[in-house]
Length: 291
Image (tube, rainbow, N blue to C red; front, side, top):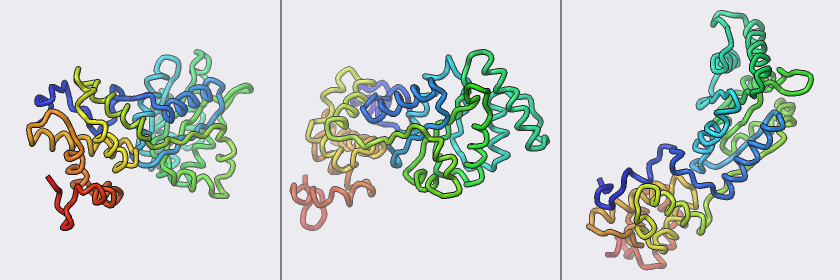
C-alpha cells in the first residue's frame, strides 16, 4: 500500500474510529464540554445529534476515556434491545449481582442496590447510548424509568444519547414527551468547514508522518471539503483514495487531479461535486477525467 511511499507509520485515513486522530474541532469540543459539565452537575439526560459520519462514535470513545477515572460507565454500541435486555446489559456493565432468570422487578432492585453502592464510593454511573435513534420505543421508555433510580439529592444513573437526526423525530413522539422533558442539554455535531477540513486533514497526516503538512495541496484539501460536504467519514474516504491515486502515479504530493480521480470513484460525493468539476474542466464532455 502507499504507507511506505509516503513514509507513514500507519494509514492516516482509516474508517475505524481511533482516538489518536481526534481533532478537537469547535463542534466536537463544545459537545464534549457540554456533556462533561452536565454529568458533573448530575443533570440526567444529555443528547448529541449528528449526521452519519460526523464522528459520534469517536466522540463517545473520547468521552469514555475522559470518564474512566471518576465514573463507572456502560457503553451501548447497538441499542436495538428489548427493555429487559437493556436492564440486564446495564446491570452486567455496572457489576450488579443478578440472575438472568430474575423477574423484571427483582432485576431493577438488584440494579438499584448496585447503583447505591457506587454512589457511596463517590463515583457516578454513566450510560452512553450510541446510535440511539435505533432504540425501540418501549426500550426508550425503559431508559427513562432507569433514570428514576435516585437518592434524595441526585440521580444514580445519567445517560448520554448520541444519534442521527432521526433521534429528534423519535423523541418528538407525544408518548415520549416525559423523556424529552428530561433532556437538559442538547448538542449538534456540524460538518467541517473549509478551514476545519484543512486542519483535520493535516492533523491526521501529521499524526503518522513528519512531513504531513505538505502532502495535500491546499486546493486538493478544499476540493475534498466541497465534495464531502465536510462529513469526516467522507473526507477520510476521499483522502484515502486520493493517496492511492498519487501513489499509483509515483507522486509525492496529492494535487487537484488525484482528488478528482477519488471523487469519480466515490458515488456519495460524485453527484455533489460533478457540476463544479465540469466547470473546472477536469472532466471531458464525455465524462472522462482529463489528465
